[in-house]
Image (cartoon, rainbow, N blue to C red; front, side):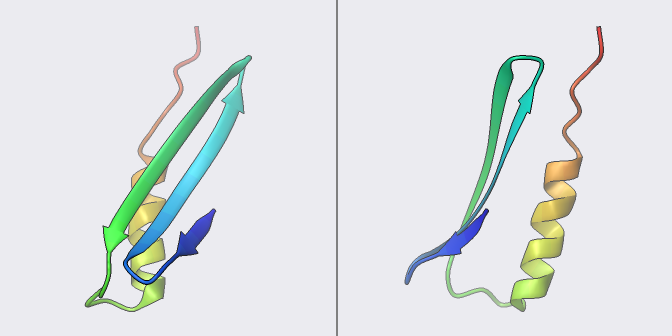
Length: 55
């Protein structure tokens, strides 16, 4: 989910896996020096670094 208001941009992901819920959240203050597409790319790369190990 990507939302914003007059002060911040919020990017979050919710993952439900094996009866557990994980919530990842990134908040960035405005104004951003980079275009919105760059911000989305960087936060998506951040989110993909998390792994859920198999037992």
